[in-house]
Length: 426
Ligand SMILES: *Cc1c(COP(=O)(O)O)cnc(C)c1O
Image (cartoon, rainbow, N blue to C red):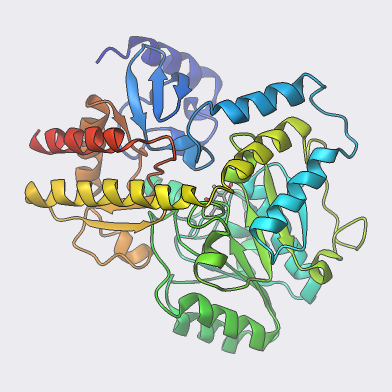
């Protein structure tokens, strides 16, 4: 495969941008080699700057549930942009978008739009602190909630793949108020609450973990968190930046029938544009300025072009057939890959929920960061590179989710499984 132009751009990028990338997950640090630079996407396909074609399973890390360059999204974006790209004043599109979010997630009575998932979680924690008058936060080992200072503790994928347990440059005071429990371990959470009674503002959790690779909540885990937080007067924050509109139209909270106090959104909600959101009951959201004393703002928040992309995406997800289709695509691919590995005599664990899955190179079961960490990363890297050579673009890290989309056809899936069979023979 000729990747000369990518290599040339990478060399230039490394001189101008740290590591040549604007987000570490895009680098191929954990798998080795040089990242490809992309020029075009359409449906399930990506083309790099050298003209190589790939079936894409990164999907911009989650937003592109409809696939690349979906006509409805493009038309909405072009129409909105033609009327001006930002006014710094309220628009009708924000009202429509807020109503749509409420329709998909009725627990969100009021919502505030921001520009990224990081902003959503950062603001949600500020809200939890403002509402409860408490400081401490509980998160889970391997849970990634963006790069907010308070949450870059045991933060999964990027850090795990790069062997950096935490980030440098974080005020020790922030990390000190963040308590960490293993995912799927209610006893550990109970212990933290017993030791810090009345001091914990919130538990923040990915209701399906996606940033240590995909790890499902075990039966009773999310319900247990609901009970523990309610009893102590702490808030339960669901970080649905990845799972929102993906695992179910109403997110993981609908899939598992659990009502969190605060929900964080990102990725799909922006339809490929920079949008995040946090929402809750009217009572809790009253804390947010200008209604309340918790300040949070944004020059480009609720941007009309981004709102147009989000509205077009969510409107397309109203069709009741789409999640059945997405679950089918996910199962066909996860089952196909599992079979390909087992036929090749390789031991893997495939964790999946509708729209997302991970192949862990370990016998499993994978239920938390520790068991995910038993994966053979060398073998993952070999598989990754062999798949790229076969025209398939999986996430370049063991600890990430593959994102099949509604643009992936059964033929795409079968081509991918056939590619995996060839890759495994190498
Ligand atoms: C991607 C992600 C974030 C961060 O969102 P950004 O838009 O990258 O800031 C937060 N939480 C979860 C669960 C995510 O997957």
